[in-house]
Image (cartoon, rainbow, N blue to C red; front, side, top):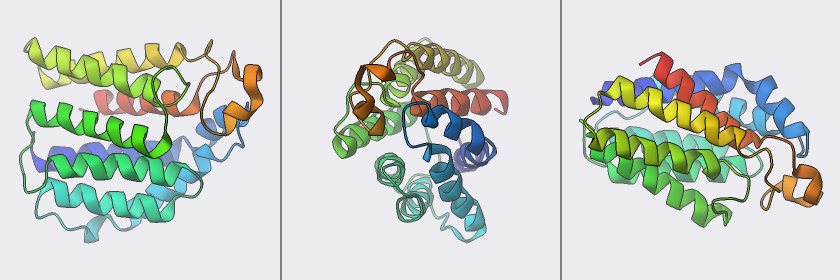
Length: 206
């Protein structure tokens, strides 16, 4: 896909996080401190505020600028986690203006690795990884099967939603929710739900 498409996806993510500030916050308030929605919204508001000034010499440079804004403007743990994800993805397409399907998979894998390294989390610990990793697997599988980009986006969104719902019976092992122990069982992980919501919006606006 073109660099313009990359920018469109990022803008969709940013606008969706701002629009869902209250929803994401309510999800987080069940067993967390409730600041997840607020943190994401403030960070992405800053991304949107600086949108016209970002260096667009290539896709990697653009994503790197977004990552720097995210890391510096989001409070709590969300800033480092989401900033690292964007930064790792940016490194994959540094110098590229057109992004291939293989690049997309590599960007997602790099983001996952960055989140694991930064947050010390892994699959099954009730974090956004429990939706992001299955989403990435679906993207890779559907691209390998020759599916069109819009079909890939729809399949990825469906997988992310199912994976987010599957976090309900899990016990949180990372983040503030982990402090509640078994009380975290029965609630959805807000990060995983956010991944699902974002994937669905990207698919709908493709």
